[in-house]
Image (cartoon, rainbow, N blue to C red):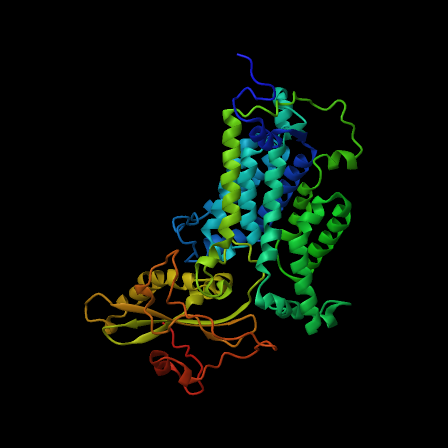
Length: 506
């Protein structure tokens, strides 16, 4: 049977095939090789930093309690030397990715180990750690080992200087997401009023040359709006040939400035390298003036053919992209300001939008004896954990069962004079106040609420007290002296003269 002219052999309309065939057109693999090596180098530095500074022990081994993400409470750190071995395996996998040696296995191992360490202690949450998890997942499916890799030397029949266009499209999309969504998130009332950037940069007033300007209000506004404009425009400016080079130089200055003004780990340096994936695929070869002749070649695939494998690839890309597009907007499903409630704040690229000055004290009440004691949480959590827990009502609720079952009840059972041979009946309460972006402090959680009666949930948590304090023109800077008449009855009974909370601990 003779097919009509222009009709593809698969029976699908030519227009439908042409809309998708560009995803499978072959592209120079040079830029992908650069991305692979850059990713590997930064991740090796991350592993070295955690192992050499004993951060593995500080955050994963020493603490008696670990903050978790709801739904991933099972991801607990391994005891003893276990977590250090996980980081060693992560480093081995990162090296394998960079060398292109057993590349797929290395990608899978790196994704599993890095994601596990990410989930095992949520106090370490950073948006760029989440980004690394996503990029590691993407690299599993991308054949970045076809060119300039040990795998290409070992298995030359698999070598090629070409990769499908969807590989660049997927990585470019994932790198663009933090910029675009970071810019969208900055269309926020606090950010547009120079907060909380103004609070952070004034702390760097000791810097030479620019330090004296960092305390000025106009400087906070300038930095805020420059960050907003850059996040929203940098991706299209990098994609347009005429503005690409100048935009990239501005981006480099932006990230270097961020590394000086803020503590952002490896994020600025990684993004300086990773953002080059938005450049044309052959930019490294042209930069180094390397000829195309003599490089491994491959037979270009027929762009009109949509095999089953290609249909699966298109389906995977569609689902992945839809998730990345929609998931960051989930905070609109919750009432209130997400910077205050923390509902929908994580995994949404809401970077540097909130600064909370927090005051928190936990109290345990034995219903039988009526005695109330303060729980010294600094004995179970390190400062990073305390800060991460104190800003999140979800983490405050999450720690309550641990305080009750692992701290308070064993303590009461060890004090026979406090018990009458019956099981202790313990209630856990919290006095948690926070100042968001320079506002006056206010309560986050009802201090009369027994936290052990509340469950973690992905739904709205109505027991979080809504944000009522307005943004101030001049940031609140106070000491945590709490007027007794502003406290609930339980807390008021614990206050000494002057209104400061007691240090009567267990």
